[in-house]
Length: 105
Image 1: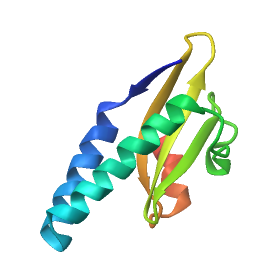
Image 2 (image 1 turned 30 degrees about the vertical axis):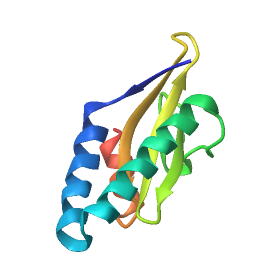
Image 3 (image 1 turned 180 degrees about the vertical axis):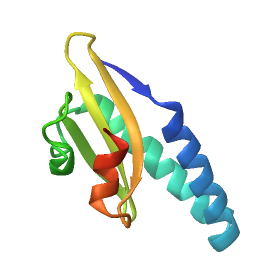
Image 4 (image 1 turned 60 degrees about the horizontal axis):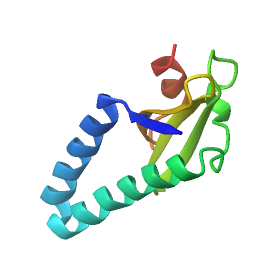
């Protein structure tokens, strides 16, 4: 299966990396980036490993979410027909769940 990561995810990763550098240093920022990249690889190998995101149930796609850090999870869905996994968001779990619903409507 092919994996497509939305530009928004890369943008959020970069923004959070910059924040990590400013607050904790380059070492922590690099570990964070590697953790996210490794999670993307795991999703590509095992697309159904993450639970269905209950907050997004009832939408046109079946979204799954994988916690990649205590504050962030990757949101994705599987398009069986296209044989592609779409990673569509890197969600800050400290935000209200209702905001996640609003972002996907």
